[in-house]
Length: 144
Image 1 (spheres, rainbow, N blue to C red):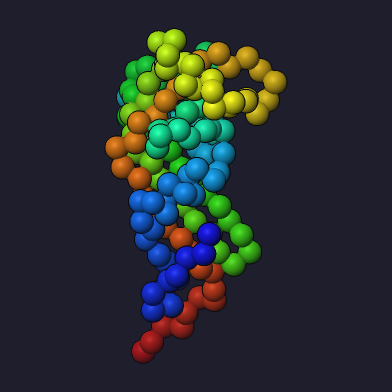
Image 2 (cartoon, one colour):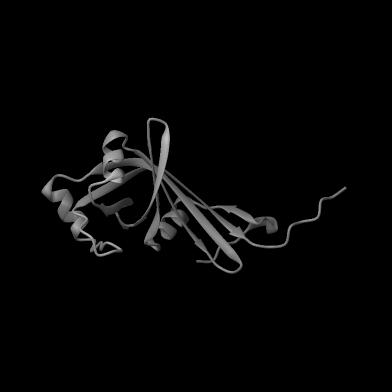
């Protein structure tokens, strides 16, 4: 995906559609949850359907923390030799319990990274998305 930076600015704020194209084209990210004011971050793989994120998990801290506080952040990025991008999704997570919801998640063919049982599906409904694209370069000289 090519991005046009205005006025040679090294940072470009992405549109919502550009941001979703990046989210849909990537399969890994980091999920941030917070309980009692303490943040926790987990690397995850994910799938996208209808502008919602889906992931699988097993019993443990991630699942427990999602049940305590469903407000989450999700971040994914890409880094190349001369450019990078970063996307942040704010949203609400819910553990899928209804068979119709689980069937949607299962249709995405989301496989765990490691050979462990991950029997719980989580859906993240975004409340906002933001993205930025960066062009790398030398540190500019300060004008006097």
